[in-house]
Image 1: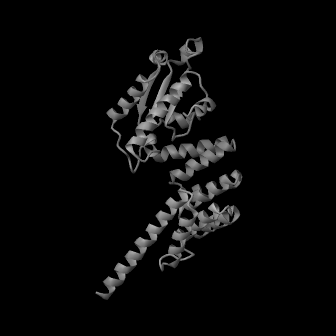
Image 2 (image 1 turned 180 degrees about the vertical axis):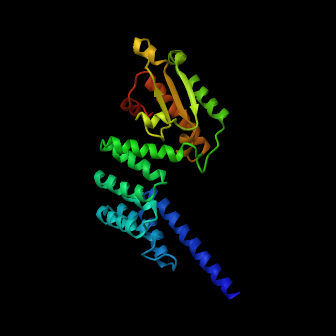
Image 3 (image 1 turned 90 degrees about the horizontal axis):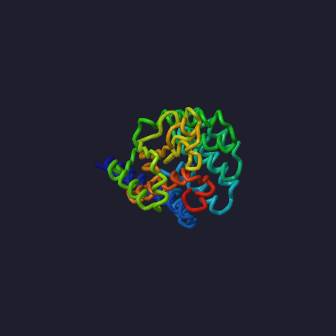
Length: 283
């Protein structure tokens, strides 16, 4: 009986630790320094926590970052990566800090080391691809995005919203229907294709990254009647259900993201570049 009581107390303390940790993460996302400090202090006093625990250190660097003590935050993140080599999130957080501090070469090095130790972590590979892209390290970018594709192309999102295919298509059709008549008529020759996940050519031909929400492929409106455009075939808009669901936290958010993605790709067909789409709120 005494052993059972000790076990129950230990389980309660562990539950309290994780509660403070997640509340601290939420406070950091909200920019609430006082609450991050509060939950860090609570973890520091728990036997299962303490200043050397991963949870304490993870909130510690966040508190220091919100205090604009960026070098100290970086030092704590580096200590996490050294002390907890089996935790890929520590590597990812270190890379984010280095990128935010405009030290992308160091972020690249950290991610190369991280993907070497955690070859099955798609998030690390994806971040490596993004950092490599910013540095114009195209071979590393392609290798990283191909690794993401290999890890994810047959894997449904763990926490899918299960936006049904019918609901997804209804949202696409409703979005098209709300376009101005001249834009709707222009889309008559454009194929709109809904897929779960991008096909391999997306990364093999170095067109885009594997987590894109949509893709416009083919001639735009201004060039679709040229000789080369005719040979290439009709313009196509691809929409990727799993990637959209991975990027959203609710069914309502997913529906809104479908609408934005459709309008974004239609904008490309009509000749708008990324800068123009960002300017009008469709980035």
